Structure formats: C-alpha cells, structure tokens
Length: 190
Image (tube, rainbow, N blue to C red; front, side, top):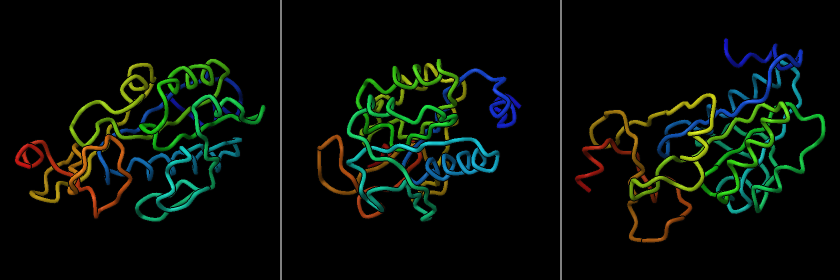
C-alpha cells in the first residue's frame, strides 16, 4: 500500500499530499473523515482544519452530509494551518475550494516536513469551472481521488454541482435547497 499508516508511525515515509475532489454530495468529506479515523486508529497525531466561513453544520467541526463529524480548527487563511502542533503527523483540510491560492504552497511545506496532508474540496464551481486552489493541489498531489455523486435527474454518475437558486455569486453556501448533483448531460440541459 502506497500510503500506509504503519509507515508513518515508524517515520519511514516522507510527507505526501492526497486530494479528494468531486461535486457536491459526492462523499468528499465522508472519505476525508474515513482516512482521518484510520490515522487515529493507527495512533497518529492529527489536526483538522476548515475555512472559518463554513458554518453550515458546526463552527468547530468538519461534518459530512451524513452528519459524521470530527472536531476541527477553523482558520481564515491557509497560512494559519502552518501554526499546527510540532508533533502533528497527519493534517486534514476540508472545503479546500474556499481557501486562498496559498493553500498548495502550505500543503507543500507540510509535506516537505514529512506530514501526510489529506485535502477535500470541490474541483469545479457551479459554472463547471476549476474552483479555487483545488486544481493546483491536484497537480502536486501524490494521490488524487475523484468521487462522484448520483445525478438526481437520471441516476448516472454526477460530476457537476448544479445551482438551483438564482445567484451569480461564486461562493454561495448551501445544501440540497441550493444545489443538486448532475451528470454532464443533465447539467448542460439546465
């Protein structure tokens, strides 16, 4: 296995960046939490970060749509992530698309220190365009996992986040009342 918790515990592995991306409702945060929980089982020292602006479920926890959660540190800028505890072995970052463009460099610095960095975020905005620092993170990551939702119109794999409300704002926090997952065909039909 490429990214073994056992190797991290022994200090045999250099740092790495893992990106989990996809549309809304595709299970990105759920997969982030799964990987973090496995690191906890391995007794690794972890820290979780999320953008301060994401208060949809909880101000101080990363929460999936299935309401699984883990305590996190909300931060205003990606550089604040570098203020982590000295003995941290694994860093989790949720909602990466909401961070500034400095996030890839922050992740690189952490990986250079031997830290396993696991990042989850939308790869595309509601217009189907690359979103925030996620595409740059995908380019420098050792592992990229693209997860799909299920298209609510036809049942095909969904890779797009269709915005159901009238707003041109790039960032609009919302849930199923504002967005739905769609496949390429159903997304293009509007």
